[in-house]
Length: 453
Image 1 (tube, one colour):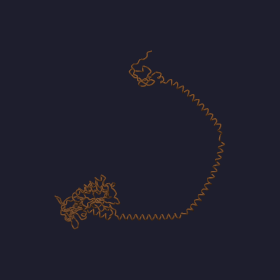
Image 2: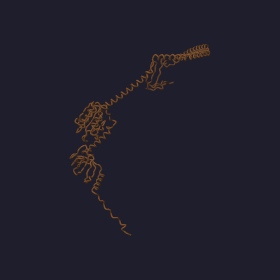
Image 3: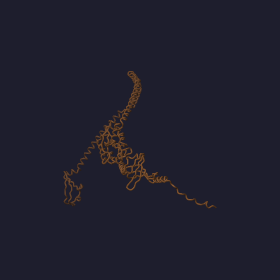
Image 4: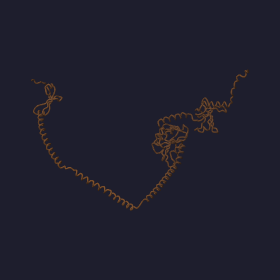
């Protein structure tokens, strides 16, 4: 047997990677193990290429890393970074394969500290929402036809010019009242709240616009103040808030009765275009004209129909008079025969009743005699009873204790009102009541002695 036939195969040689394959593998490993994260640092070597891409270095005191933000992402940034700016970037860790450079692919950028502001924004939003300040049921409807519109903004703001231009174009008949206030900077939140409270107290407007143009989160921070939100909720006038751009949200937006994406949109929501009102009035006038024409047409047809049914009043009266005479004759004939029959039946019944009527004369005399005898008997009984009553009254008068007292006798009672009949019922040093003919007397008992037989 050939032993070489069963010998083990030689070990495989290790795979050889190209530089491109190595960089691609490292890039995939970095992207897989480092998801999108926020990284803070200082801008250095910033370059905005002709293509619109941003290239810069993000560094701190101990290290640095290259970063790129492509045009599709950079166009949504709300500021242009400059050398030395403190920023925070949301980036994906990757590798630029052609050069093998480790870098950050930036998705979003914001000024340093914005994360803390956003956290404060979320906390205040959750607090006010829990108190019910953002409840849709609390919010009031915006009047459809506003005659006066109030504006709370800065007189120098571009947003004011946009609002006034929009209102002039859409509703030149609307009266506008400006409540000037700074919309950014230190103390601006208190002044914005004061302007809203002033508008509410004066009650000059039908709707109130609280507006400001776009800007960074720091620029818009006055509208994230708790005092501004509570003042908007307590305002007696419906409030529309239009702050920043469509993607900007502030606490004031949630507290308002209606949020507008921009100041111009706030003006459009507050005032319906005059052309729309005129078109609606014209449409309603056309509907009214149509209804009136239809009603007149129907009335004319009804009048024609009634005129065809109308006859001469004299002929109608003669016809009705003839009908009345016929009815009168029929009524007389219908009532005469039953009346005759009823009269005949009544006469028969009367005759039968008279034949059956008994002779009551004898019974009446008998009743009179019995009544006379009963009256005499009652008179005799009354006289007898009166005599008996007089005799009993005389006897009763003889037995009256008062008469005995009038003859000089007395009646003794103890303190309980019990009549005393024997000396043993009396006690020395006690009092008794002695009743005489003309009154009573209290008598004390000195001693008691029984009569000896």
